[in-house]
Amino acid sequence: MTYARAAVAALGGALVMWLLAGAWHEIVASRLYADRIQDEHQGVGLIFLAYCVLALLMTFFLRHARLSQRPLVQGAVLGSVIGILWVFPHELALAAAHGEPLGYVFVNAAWHVVEQGTGGIVIAVSMYALARVRRPPLEG
Image (tube, rainbow, N blue to C red; front, side, top):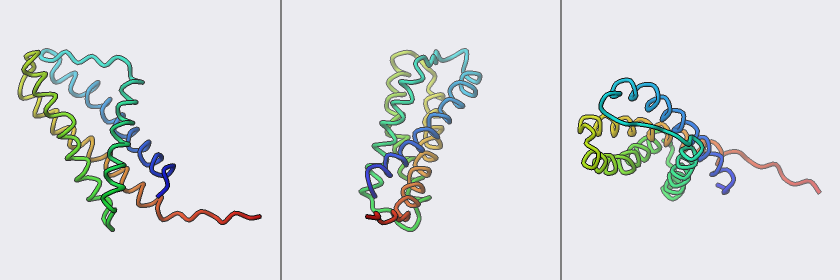
């Protein structure tokens, strides 16, 4: 797989995770926990950049995992693990520092298993599909 194709897969995963994050944090969680958390998401461009970095890291891990014939499962598993590693410890620290409810920490971590799991699926399936695309020979 070329770097360009891996970057395309990462961009697709980043976009999906970013959109899911917006739906969760700005629509669902902000209404469910409005009185208990101070979630303010300014700078959506910077947030998208963070998801691009995350997706590139996920792509790196998947490239070195040697994709099996089951990219859907492999992407979901890697994404879910990344979701827990990326969010859960940070959320615990925020709960301790800012008094956010512990229940929200676990709900948000579970959400990120879904969010990054979905991103992992998009990345893995894209990488699997793009690796099978043949480049036409150069005419000369």
